[in-house]
Length: 169
Image (cartoon, rainbow, N blue to C red; front, side):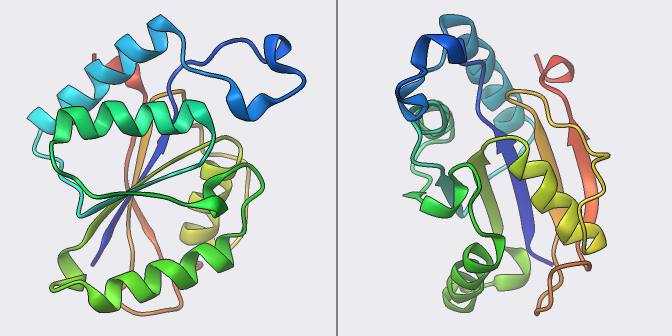
């Protein structure tokens, strides 16, 4: 079963300071520091990615930069559907195509870096086929799901990890 890790971007600057263009809101110094600690801990625990996808927003790209610094030569793609209010169906089509090209799809490990409430909504849709509003994902936190080897994925994912950053640093 392929593994999917949903990672929320690290602590970012206050929204009020970026009212004209929230897409440019960066991580704070504390956000960079904590995100690096989380990434190092996950790496030390043996987590690896075959692909890391990130939202195009600055804070998510900065989070992915930290992960790639820690994880080494992990391939990274910017994915428009990971921006706020992205379309899960469109994203799933792309991931399905990527998996068909992967040498061992059943062992594939994919990390996606995005935003709330989209990441928990997507996780719940993959697990239950609908959003229930019960999962919580803190900044720099992680949700791990196992996906079935073939579609449909919606409603057939298995939650195996939900961890706040405070347990990793």
